[in-house]
Image 1 (cartoon, rainbow, N blue to C red):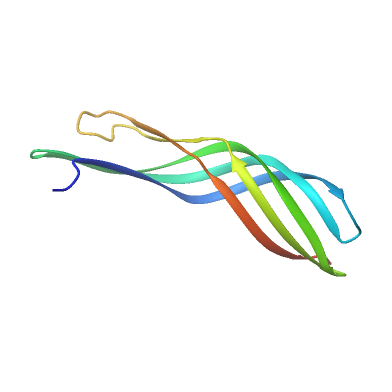
Image 2: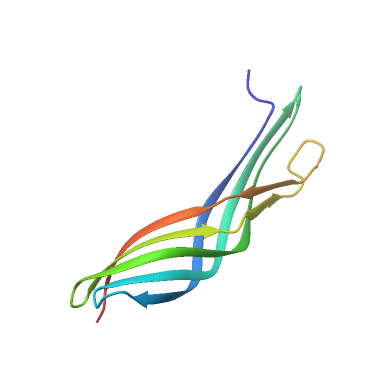
Length: 123
């Protein structure tokens, strides 16, 4: 038997604005703390069924959340830098209005952590 009520939230895209506060340990190795704000575009899908009544909704929205993390960078060559970064985001509130049979709103909180590995070429 299918669950009479389900909902799922999906992060579609994310844009970050951040500042890196850091310290150069050596000429090639640095430690930094990324601090910033992220704008998250999401989709929430709801499926509510009871007997012959049902409500299926797909809603999108946008929320912002602050984040803080920790990062390391290593200069591999003169113009080439390798970065490893972990960020912890504030809870992101995902909302969908009138998403159930009873026209109730859905509010859920998403915990988001990210790990980034990057390579940068400095001109």
